[in-house]
Length: 394
Ligand SMILES: Cc1cc2nc3c(=O)[nH]c(=O)nc-3n(C[C@H](O)[C@H](O)[C@H](O)COP(=O)(O)OP(=O)(O)OC[C@H]3O[C@@H](n4cnc5c(N)ncnc54)[C@H](O)[C@@H]3O)c2cc1C
Image 1: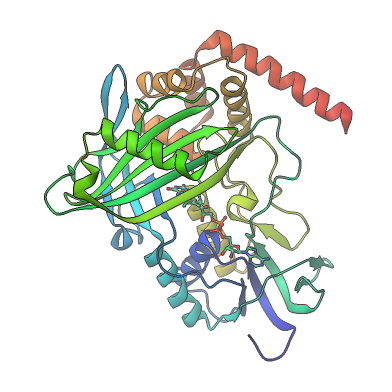
Image 2 (image 1 turned 120 degrees about the horizontal axis):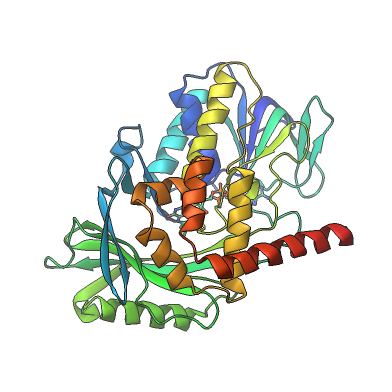
């Protein structure tokens, strides 16, 4: 802990996980200097606690940190295997350890103050923000706060699903996985009553791969449920688990909701990461938006501007996601059918760019046209009625 409180800084990162680590690295990359920075988090993130999979153009400074990347990925359904050629994009796998290491290096270079304590309330008087601990003691006074502590949306969504998953890092003694062959989504898994499930495989080499079972839906499984689902998926892949070692287990729960995440709760507080709306409601993918926003924050600070990034996704994408979530949740459309059509009727690059929130309105229209029109119209009308009801209630 730092000796004398409150610490006076220009920028306080409250929460030092994924979003904050990317901001620290971006500040370093953009050569920001002379900025007084504090990081407030009871946990100093280190090592492997998650694996980020994301797509993007190769050739940025994350390349040396990647465990693997693929220019093709498979989408598998009962009807067959579709190979998506991602060119010019690539699908990439980034383990958390090198991201946290790079952030720690950046923190040292920026001479940032690390406060290993939980933050409580933030008090923003419009000029400075006071970060208090949960007992109300002042920890930090900052010109700006980037707050990435996990939190719920400001209001419950009309649809509140979760992306929940368990992955096994499987190690083999002999060649078992095809290094070239990553599976983005494999829908042959038994489908839940409500929601959609899929497996995927991300091989690092022919003896080491992440094999994961994921569900999008309203309710979590219990511990035995995830293990059962993963064993079932390993069977489908023809993997002999008795010949493999589970080296690591990765569990996660990510919100998939049309509930609004507030990105600017007060003039000098900016929320980032999942708390700031960086999680795409229809897929749970978050990393690309965090990366983009980290870069925008660092560029702004390097130019002496306020560290306020553009919204993580355009409003029209959030509306499309709300409709898609509603259609899936109310059973207007089956999950497997929904994703099958998306990949069937659009070039892969368009789908991936759409999911990252960077497509043009014309491309969005093409994506919309590929969805089952009638059921989606029902969901659009239902969503509009839901919004109206919520507004009247407020
Ligand atoms: C296992 C897992 C795998 C994932 N894989 C992917 C993926 O492949 N692709 C993708 O796009 N997204 C993925 N995600 C989603 C998302 O990218 C991650 O959750 C990401 O870490 C979100 O970053 P964040 O900064 O918002 O939250 P976190 O990384 O969770 O950081 C929040 C930080 O806030 C700190 N904190 C909590 N309370 C306080 C407090 N009171 N005061 C101060 N600090 C506090 C925590 O200690 C933590 O360090 C995954 C998520 C999980 C859990």
